[in-house]
Image 1 (tube, rainbow, N blue to C red):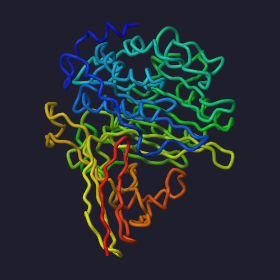
Image 2 (image 1 turned 180 degrees about the vertical axis):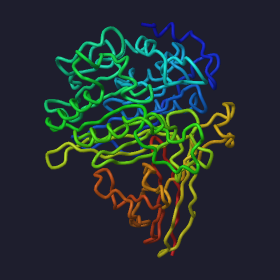
Image 3 (image 1 turned 120 degrees about the horizontal axis):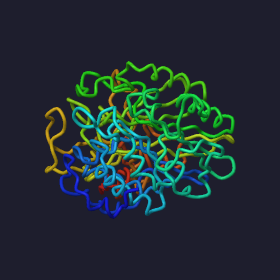
Image 4 (image 1 turned 45 degrees about the vertical axis):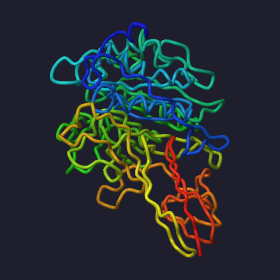
Length: 475
């Protein structure tokens, strides 16, 4: 295994971070929204598309990691890609970027991506190449991914599973929780444009004489067992089975960006097996942007906002899904069963708020806020010749349109310091069933009614950031 000290001294030749690994970002402030989980609940985090040495990756990835540390999830699921190609310096630098998670006691688990394999032809990462360097660099990660012990007693490792030998596993699963596990994370490898293509060099092996004929069989076995046990079943892999984005603004390199560009039979096979075996959620990357879709009762989350350049020739922001961020999944019990809700948290450098300074009793105020994302102007421009400027994300629900269902809901909330002065006007999107949401003081609409004279502080909360404005109400 490559030692971390040795990795730190290896220069990277990747675009956007020439000469060294990017330094750690300053520690984030305390969490603002979502608030800490209610009693008996806990969080996990997912994101994909680290691409730490491309586009804004050198800037966004360290910020994302420090944000996640503040939320203190029980573990992080990462859907890759790591960098432009899977060389020791690229993979090793990413391990250093993620080190604040491990230092905070938060383990992370990876599903390999096509860029994580060593490129043997063509620009950037390709679908063919060896997985051996990836296995070597991450051999020292916690089991069942790496060769080290499990992170703690709540991580329940499967018994009687085949040995993958020395080095990181390419597919694996574990249960998390005390006693009856709350969630099972099933990690698959479709880094060679599909699950079947990637079966040829799996660790542990699949095929004749092995425990599982292929990864699809492994998936069905592991997910069905989780369903029988009453655990949530989450699957993490790199390439999605569908691409639900608006095709008119998709960058040409990412058209139909699924397993095999839509030609792989694994797309339909996976969807069918996931549905019948009770998979609750599939956590994905591959597309540098954020989108979602469903097949039956199975929800698919493409959370590709780690780094790199958004895969669009058109606009970015709230109505597109093209921005940087990560997904928090909150696990809790409802009517004796484990279930979950999710929050998509955009990365924030600063927040701009538009609000009046004064109002009269009876007025209805409508405030607006925009999250300006972390940005380094010295890094290369985004793909497609888009302006080299910070992405701005308006904190509101996405606008209605034919692709509205594929767009994530952003996690934010407006809050008044004194509802007897400025009362929140509820919105249809308000998460009234969420126990951390207080409809007496909070709303997602940004709308408030001036009730009586006085002063109230209105605050918008998102991720680890807030912005407050003072409003004077007179007669």
